[in-house]
Amino acid sequence: MLVGSASIDVLLRDLATATIDAFGTQDVELGAVACLQVVAEMRKRSREALLPPSLHPTIPPAMSLQVWDVGASPWGAFTMVMCRVSCRSGVRARGFTTAAFVSTEAACRELRRQFGFPARVADVSLRHGYDRVTATVTFEGNVIAQVEAIDPEPMANDDVQYTGILNLAHTPNGARLVQVEPHHHATRVERLRAALRSFDGAAWGSALLEPAFVVSSSLALESVEIPAIRFVCKPDQLAFTGTEAV
Image 1 (cartoon, rainbow, N blue to C red):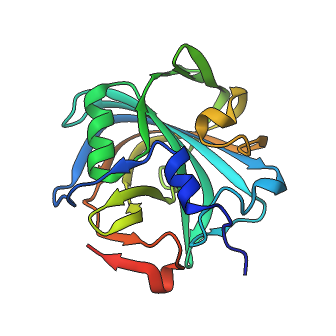
Image 2: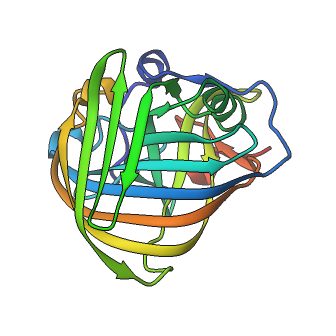
């Protein structure tokens, strides 16, 4: 059975690990969202090395970038991007977050505090038109990711499904993988042909993050509901024994 081989101590030290002081009870509603997702295969050497021992890597290894351009939220408008490594927690498909960047201080603070995202403030932009979508992330003066996607083709609103999110964070239960389960309600979905014009793996959590081939790309116009956290998992135990209700 393949499991992650990354040191939990190293992950806690190297990622921008968040702290959840108390688990909330309120869901969060995000409106007027444009969500760009780009999925890329990675090199084999990154397969187990990017994940804690509680998670199973996928074959082939893959990573995804998700950019959310949010028009309305309890924290105002903001744009967020997250990098996730594809994996499974037990039998459930998940994405382990290695880094996240948010355009405003308020949204960054609440995404860390409520949901454990390893988020930092950066210049994040998403622009979409009739023929293309572009996304750029600039952190501390350096462009750390740039995506261009072209030739949009309409799809059915339920043709794209997003896996749940796992954030390694300090919680009242200790260091845990926090299960974030956004519900996406799309009103329009398009398939695109995307290319990563630049990507700095080290800035996204590890130099092992090496996107080798873009597999798929889509843009959804939608609303997103993020339920309050219900479950966390010990990062050194498989989901069958390490999952805890909160």
